[in-house]
Length: 316
Image 1 (spheres, helix red, strand yellow):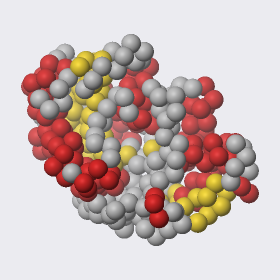
Image 2: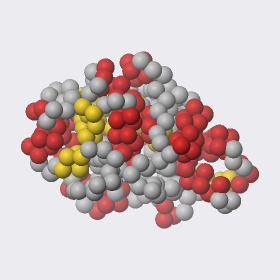
Image 3: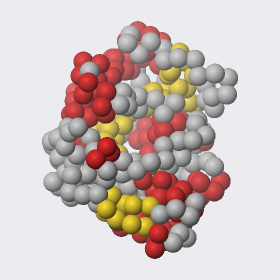
Image 4: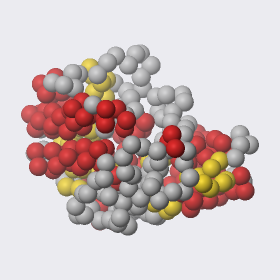
């Protein structure tokens, strides 16, 4: 098994990636910017993410680095574009350069928001065309990996669902993207409350959701197989928000009569365009990784098992 470093391991997706990789037998170390305390589940190495040589010392002995750390503040990136650029493109360049120095493969986790939302089930070779700063910064970071890394791949994800591994209360709110949507709905309906699924032409309304443990499993496969290029870690079903809500009620045994539909509140809208349809085709990726895409009901079934047992449930 490989020794894999993870950036962003304290975050929602990064923590699950670390957990799954470790569970599969990989030797995992999380590169962190500050002391995370004694209760953190995986080994850590303190690094200065603004310094290539510090990152290289953190990657010493690693076969690969799963790069998930970002500036996770949509409004903040518009307020300070220089900091946003460095938090995405600059950091990715330093990670790549450090990986090149240490002979580590780079696995960069990107987003379906690199597309403008006018396509449907777009393939891996579709050129990016982002409509907001987040998508632009992700697309620019992809180019850093694809053109600068001695060995590496870009893994686009979207509609990610799952539990936070290092925080007792992870994200539980609906937003104009697909992230966190399912568990927000489950929590509301289980509490006896109604839940309004947002429907609007100016939000992310169609995606191919994937559970976060599956991202970790697919990253491990990509590292083990030495895959390069652009990959789509996508669920096997393109769904609208309404279809995802109904499938969630079916899989979790919830009362669909408590689900309403309507536009998002004004305060939830972002100060920039949002891509409408970000569904990804993933069959070529899955063939390269020796697995298959999983339907929305399979994804939701894995998520229900994760909620019930409190630990990640990868499908691949």
